[in-house]
Length: 137
Image 1 (cartoon, one colour):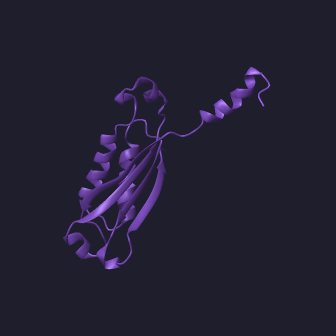
Image 2: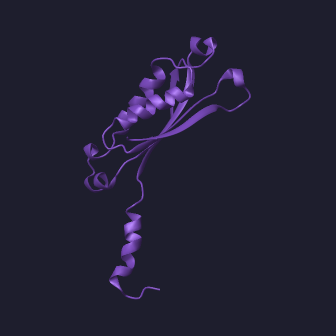
Image 3: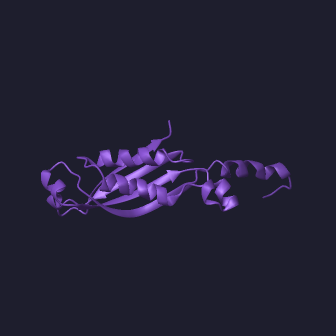
């Protein structure tokens, strides 16, 4: 029950401000030639990418200005460039490349990347995926 003291609500509000804000781009789909086996590199495969980044979104929430936040199109462009670019053997390598690129964008404090594929050689599984988290050094 509220006693009427003004400072009684201060602590919960301070805790509220300590939350981490996130931007999530889910289920991006790109084609690439990645994998350990030569057959995986001969034909393109579909890769699904999810990027969750941490950033302070208080300012863009107040200003409604794109330049105050993280531009989603730039995050998507990083993921696309990695998946459609230089071949890699491991999903781990792709996820790390995406994480490095996203962390290089302004205002990004941390990033979690999930890269998945559905390799025919591993049927009947739904997919193989790697999930990594990186923070700004």
